[in-house]
Figure 1 (cartoon, rainbow, N blue to C red):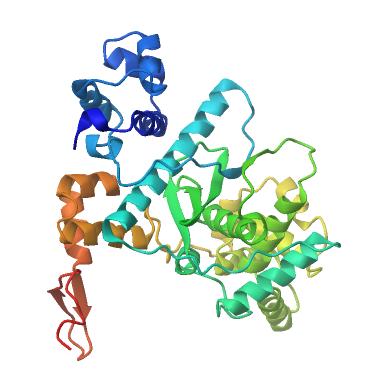
Figure 2 (figure 1 turned 90 degrees about the horizontal axis):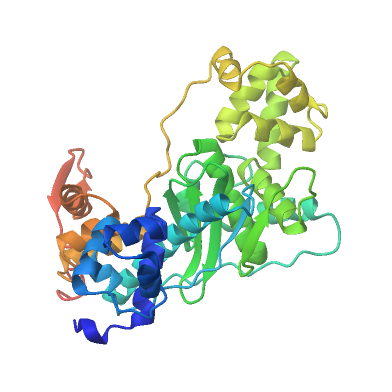
Length: 403
């Protein structure tokens, strides 16, 4: 690679994104390079080309590779993500927001790099965008959730235990990473690539599932709308937010299934108490709040039931323990990257298109962990005859050559 011919603007954009993703300030980076802040800002504004040794030191500080910063196969994506946030517009909150956007930018940049390396075609067979009619948006969201469950063959009664896999199978790229606690997630639609969701990995499983379903509702309604919605106390939610909330509730807790389970419980013991509510929330893998409000909206329990539970002062974890609800292993993947992303990374490594070091950087792990992931992905389990056996397979071997 001819460093002197590298596109300076693209390099500057990747340097800014890498710094923000790593949570490093301009002052810290400038001090790391033993230069003044104005000189460092000139690098980020593409008015000064960093020296090769400075680039190496910045890559180490940002925990990325020089190759990633100098990448020429693809241009750095310019994302305008949409998110709902209780962050304010003060500088500290804005810095946290920029860090989250930079993380998503880095993930998309790496994903595009892998697709380019392997000449892989992105999934673009998305469901058509829906348009909100005149009338109650919540009822329309209920209808859309039922239609989408039917289209995806999810049925009308059962929980969606592998929600992330369902979304990724229809071409939605779902990433999980640590974000500021006030941020549940953000989404972006990238032309010629697809729809991406970044979910806060630090949130409980139930909240992550709700965020994924909520953002999928946005994907169906307003996938190309950029911007940040700042949520403020006593502020009425905009129509698209109300749609996404209602869609998430109906998608995760289908009306027919919830009603059947509710009436079966009432018929069995002529009652439906808080313990039953806890067990139903656990069955659908949603929060107790979401389950209670869903039953209220379906007029199965009295309005204000959640307010009464909250006013009792009893912790939700204590209610669950009293109801016999125990934490269950998560059926869905909680990995940072989508499964397809990891498969592309391993395939690029197996075909010698990237080094082990690059694989580790793409998977955000150590060299040892990268090799373990690669070897695991290159093995197949065969238990057709009742005996489990693992054998290696070359991911790049043609299945057509022997015909």
